[in-house]
Length: 208
Image (tube, rainbow, N blue to C red; front, top):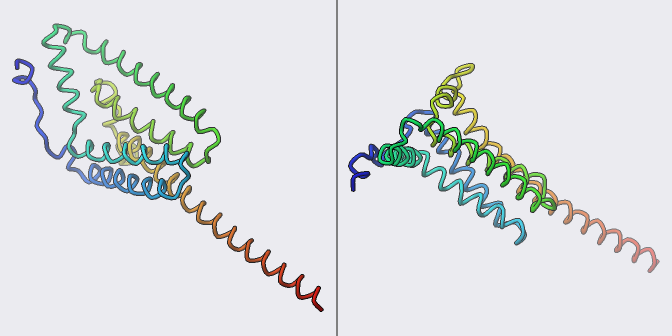
């Protein structure tokens, strides 16, 4: 009960800026796109695209409800109650290193597992892990990182570039996979039609 009294977080719109709404919209567009891609895939590839779609649904909800701030607040309350709040920066650095290692291992394992999958599927995996890693590192609320990603370049904030960049990468990979599949199906249909036409011509020539 003591921790609950100190928790400085309430559900609400976490990022009401234009950038925040655009980012949330991209999350949901990527979710829909990945879901549509999963429907057209083989059972093996659905194991990749369906979880990616679910992950982006959760990330989109988190973006506007700002659930990661709740995680940060829980960590702050725990640090105060357990008496290591003054050493929180050390813990934050360890957490960031831990997240980086986990993401690197996850990418390696998933890429090995997906070694027979299409290039677009592997790109989607990389984009998804990078976005999840970014969100977790943001939750650590490390001052130097927050200061950097809060800065701008050419009018664009670094947090927009990192987050939107990862989402757009996944969205691009999903559209590439689905359109590429439709193109292949069209080629197969054309090739089948050409073979049937050739067979008919050969049969006609034989009859003559």
